Every structure is written in structure tokens, then in C-alpha cells.
Length: 501
Ligand SMILES: [Zn+2]
Image 1 (cartoon, rainbow, N blue to C red):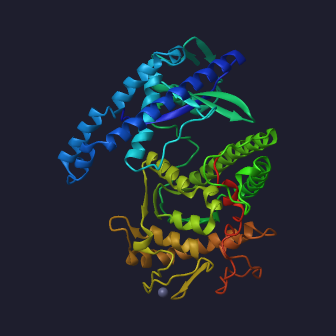
Image 2 (cartoon, rainbow, N blue to C red):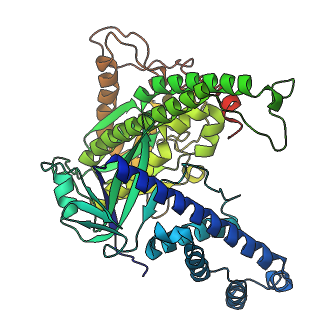
Image 3 (cartoon, helix red, strand yellow):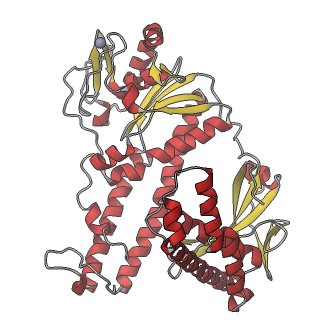
């Protein structure tokens, strides 16, 4: 039953009538209750298992085959296996849920719940979450023969017959529809506080590659900074801002979050201590209609933000792939960044960017290799003398041994010179290709300045000074005030989001 062939998803909006919509909502809610039941039962079984004497004994065994086997046997004894939870779900389904949820869909729900508890058992998750009203948004089948069935551009689901909205001209859609369907998933999204329904077809194969997306052949060194991105190929280089357009929306979001926080406090003064912190222990939260309105505005903004980010990421990714698909880059020190820059990093989602770039590069026959920062120290090292000197983030230029280069471009250049076998900088190679690339990198810096003519060059580039016209780019050695432009904006953030209700 487990499939290992590659799959991709095609999503199509559904044309639903109000009657169908309420039926779907009832089914989603039945799914939610079944999910919660399976979650509760799995948790209970896990607890019993852990309280057992055998569990304590097996834990003391040395790691190895016999320990694993003993644990497997114990899991069976306490019925803490996917199979047993399926069985449990079948029992629950023998109630009113039976009317709304087919057996395959029920099994998928059971698996989802069991896997959540398993994550907790393995210490990969702190806790599991029961789903509240309206928090269960997807249901899926096991195949395209029973339960959710997609045929003739229509989704059939136990008495419902919902045509899909299909853009005949879209290559992505016709490509997807030409592939074998593994199974279907129905998805509910709240858009402008209305419910919209979609079918996701899980298809066998690899996702569509737009032909107009050129695939380049250069070797790429990449540097993703908190607010910049530097790309260095063999004959081209580029320095640009990373997801900068998204920052204003983030401000709008913070404004709404503060508003929501004020409303929450005004509605629930009894839940707060005198110093403004939230009281400990179990509490009831009153939600005014205004509060609910703000919440739905926030959800809508979040959705827009995610869509906007996706398109910005996509554009940058396509630009990189057009240059080349063999990419090397330093691991993003995401945790350290979060400490320094807070939510403004989260909104740009650099890790998500890297993983989708990786996927696209691999789909195009290339690779993306991340190497550990601590072994290469690209932000410190000089390829002529080999010295590693820590630079504060505010220092935007690498200046050593006669080299003067914008720091992110220089790091990207060094990333290009990392030996992927040993994950260490190939100094000889760097020295060999630097003379040819230096003018390319300098040109990338001048392009940044030119394109910003009139406008302000972001301080994170470290080129925000007015240079005399006509002269070649002359980096100023003393650009030190230019802290990244994402540092400041995180004062209220955590306050308003501390209590998840
Ligand atoms: Zn040097």
C-alpha cells in the first residue's frame, strides 16, 4: 500500500452548491471527531504502554536489533500500531460517523492521528493537538476508485457530484490531468471568511516544468542573508533584496495582531495579572464579534502573505535555475537569525526558499548542496591569505589582500569554490577563478546602484552612498552603519502572540 513513486499535486477549485457545501462541512466535522477520537485512543494506549513494567525493562536494553524487536512486540501487545488504530477507527465508524465517512477515508484519518502521537512518542513533537471546531480542513482517500473519485473533470464523493473549474488553456492543468491519479484530497479554505472547496489530485510523476523557465548550465554559489540574496555563476552575478516587498505587509499584520491583543484584553480582563501578563492555569476566553472579525482579517492577511511570498520565492528560484542548477550554499544559521531578527525572518521563510530551490534544481537534473557554516566560515575567510577574521554583520564589505567586494557577493563567490566532497573551501580554485569573476561581481554591485537611482539602496547592500557619476564602483571601506534592515521591527510581536487561544 505504501507507494514510493514520486508524486505531485494538482489543485482544482470545485463548483459547489450551498447544499453540497453544508454536506462537506458535516463530513469534515465527522472527520474531525473521528480524528480526535483516534488521537485520544492512541494517546491512551501510549500512556498504558509507557506505564508497563516491560517498557521500563526494554528501555534499559542496549540499542540494537533485539531492543527494537522487543519494542515492536510491546507496541503490538498494547495495540499501539497503525493497524490497531485503523481497527479502532472502524469501530468508531460503526456509529453515526458511518453515514459521513467511508472506510478508506476513516483509515487515512486514523493514520494521521496515529502518526501525530507517534511523533510525540519518538520525542519529535512536544504534544499533539486536538482539532477544534472548524479546524479540520482536509480529507483524503486511498485510491481513485472508492470514496473520493475524480472522473471526467468532476469530483464524486458519496452522493455528491461536483464539477471542477478547469482552465483549458493552462499547460500545468493539462499536464497534470494526463497523469495517473494516486488518490484525491478535498480541501476547505477560508477566504474572506467564506468557505471555498478544492480537490487536490495526488498524481504519479514529477511536477510540470514550464518550458519558458530556462535551465542554465553554470555552477552557482549562493548566499542567502537575512534580507539579501547573492548569486554568483560563471559569467553572471546578481545581488538583490530577499523578499523585501513582503515587509510592509508584515507591518500591517503586526498592527492587526496588536488590535486583536487589545480586544482580547478588553474582553477578558479577568485572565490577566496586574502587570499585564496572562494568568496561569485553565481559563475561559470570551471572543467578541469584533475580535472574531479581526481574527478573520488576520487569517486573510496570512493567506495573502503566504501567496505573495510564494510568488517572490518562485521568481528568485526561476532566476537562479535559469543561470544554473548545480548550486552550493552555506547552511542558513536559522536559529541564530531568529534570535537576532525575530519574526521578520519567519515572514521571509529562507529555509522554505532553500528547500524549494533544492527541489527545483533536482527536478532539473542538478543539485543543491548546503555545507556547514562552522567548517567553511565563508563570511570570515579571505581566499588570498586564508585568514578567517570574524566580521560583524554591520560590516558589508570584504576588504583584505587588495580585494574589496560587497560581502554577500564575496560569500557567494566563496560558496561556489567549496569542494562538495570535503565541504571545505578550495583555495586554489578560488585563486584561479577570482580574476575572471571580480569584474562580474563589481558589475552586479553597479547594477544595484543604478537600478536604485533616485530610490534608496537598501542599507543591507552596504552601497548606500552617493558615488561620483562615471567613476567605477569604489567600495567605501568604512560602511559600518548599515545594519540589515530587518533588525528593528520586532518589539510587540511576541507579546501579542504569546497565548494561543
Ligand atoms: Zn587576505
